[in-house]
Length: 120
Image 1: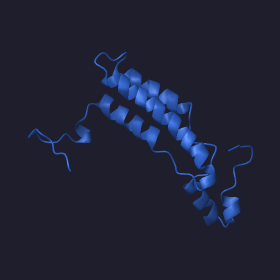
Image 2: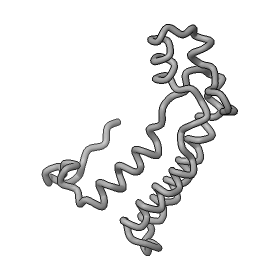
Image 3: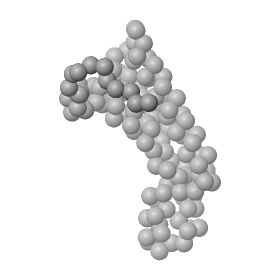
Image 4: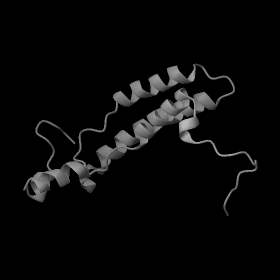
């Protein structure tokens, strides 16, 4: 079953959103859209990082949707970005990195090996 809007107003385009709302949506996308791992062996690291980022995003959304948000949207967006910086998508080989290494002539094993000094 498909849900349909109940109002007859024209849809709001993203460009028409207030800048703070657009910035928050960009931060949420940044939180959720991290590179996929090249191998299933790196999935655990990827999933842990993504889980941490999702948790912070949920906290931010719950706060903003509360009847009495603790802080304004600009502060909350900055808070989310600070938390995302604590959980960068690193420590695993991404699909893009593996494809680039293969294009350079490396073997699959070399392409998906963890960078020197990085633990998975």
